[in-house]
Length: 404
Image (cartoon, rainbow, N blue to C red; front, side, top):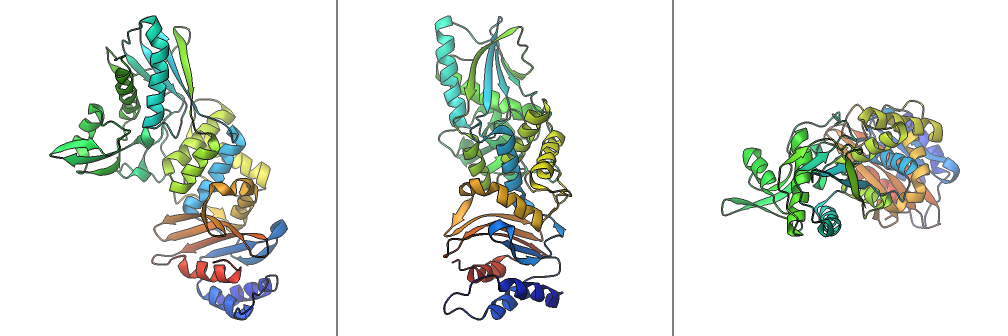
């Protein structure tokens, strides 16, 4: 296998320039080949998709979080780069206030506080007294994400149409009492009770995997900020469904973050929750509500086939947390080509824009290199096997293509 790989690499090397003072091309490719095992894959492409190095590029491999580039591209294709997630507030004749969400991945404390200020300004002139605060999360059928387990780890945070702060809470324990570790986020009693029941003394954790608790946490945060504006909730905070014939729209709050910023944050922090929020919202937009994981996957597969010519993508969710996902290096390269106009949304390291992925026994990395000659190269690296890292391959690659 190594001899076969080396043959492919040596032929491809003739297409790459040799920098002054560099070791012979054959030596550099020989070193690179020694870092690749039989289950690994490597693809480097240049202008017009020209393959410069190709090893196992047609083998379907678990992509881990590099899959998020596809999810980002699907969201941009379906929703549009300037899309802003809406959240609606309704009021009925009984004074009940309804909070209806549409899957905003960045429904964070700061935006909920702004929403409360806007709502209070609209409610104050009418002397409306809020009875119940009702959270409507029916825009999504709450999905079960393959690969996500019921742990407290933030990467296992579940999805929903109304999720505050990524369905996580960051707290500390001071003098035996739990307090918020974030100045912008109050530790409401609802969250404190959940923490006391099952959490460690401090840290950032998934607040809950219970559908009621997920939605109600957002409701309790909104109630806190409304009370701060002088409009307290007099009744209960509960889940329910808004009926537009009975309730009137008070305001539609648009996220301050356009989709490109949401995508940039999702990629920078490799946030699994955000990735699947985007996928499910894209599916709902493509095929109608309620949003489901199946619709999101169908939207991604449809776009991959029709736009990028990817015929055998095995996709079960959008974050890369599931080992059931499979993609070929050659197909991920096609996704990189389509994503190129948005490559500035990826993390940078000198001349490189990239995304990594990590699961037990899986190390992946993909992105773009700007060479000293002005050419942009794309690369995909899949490393399989426990105890192995990307580092040796990346050192050789950077040397090979004139990077750092």
